[in-house]
Length: 189
Image 1 (tube, one colour):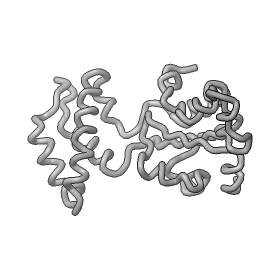
Image 2 (cartoon, helix red, strand yellow):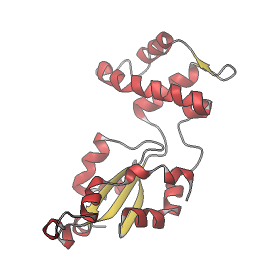
Image 3 (spheres, helix red, strand yellow):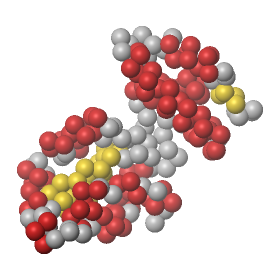
Image 4 (spheres, helix red, strand yellow):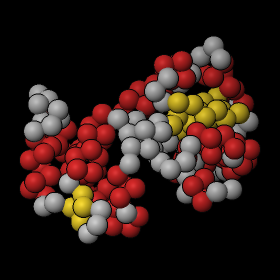
């Protein structure tokens, strides 16, 4: 198992924990309601406002010194970008600033590659190679690794698609949706 897949422990769903160790016999879920299917959605490339932030950071990063331009200069570039022209700029800015800080800190640790739009490996491929380990660790019968940008894959989440919209996956941060067999069957897959 790779270091990447070991660090993906956040895929564990607290709802599954409740089913694994019920407090009493009456607390055990009915078999048809037990969460046994995991859909792991991956976006291997930053897009939208995160992509724009990374492009700005890349342009304001000096590889030779390993430093960024002053924050004021980065903020001005953000304001003059396509994000700055958005009617919801203030809301987007509230999302951008913590992300920019995170990526600047990550750049200190790993260098300029932290500003790449993709990870240096195929995230979907790594997860698929470790699917048996994932099933075993999460106590699932069926796991699928899906592309979050593919409409056909997204439709497999059924009524839980809002989870992908509210908390979209990004490189290194997949989103897992856990379903019962009945829920998964109802999606038609």
